[in-house]
Image (cartoon, rainbow, N blue to C red; front, side):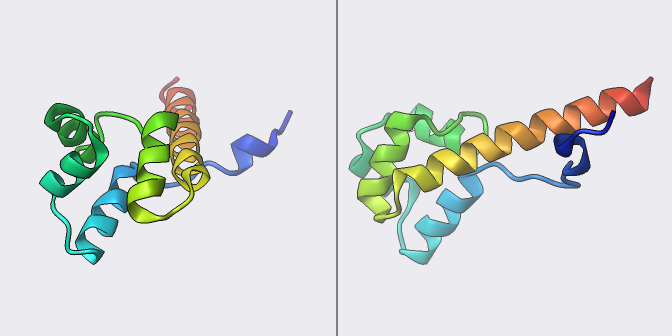
Length: 97
């Protein structure tokens, strides 16, 4: 049985933090500016920008304030990343068997 999700497995994915880094660069901001404006600690921001933490709903609301980009955009990026990552993992498991 063919499913829609199996037809849409991406070849490559990127963590939403890549978009945050692009926004910081485009605005001439640094990591410390994001730390100061967000109220989140250095450890969280550092791990997030490395792709080791996810964008939470609360942090999406903070990003909306800082970048004036809707929280829904950030949440959608994170959810799409998680879905695509899972689809790739499932595909790779199937190919390994």
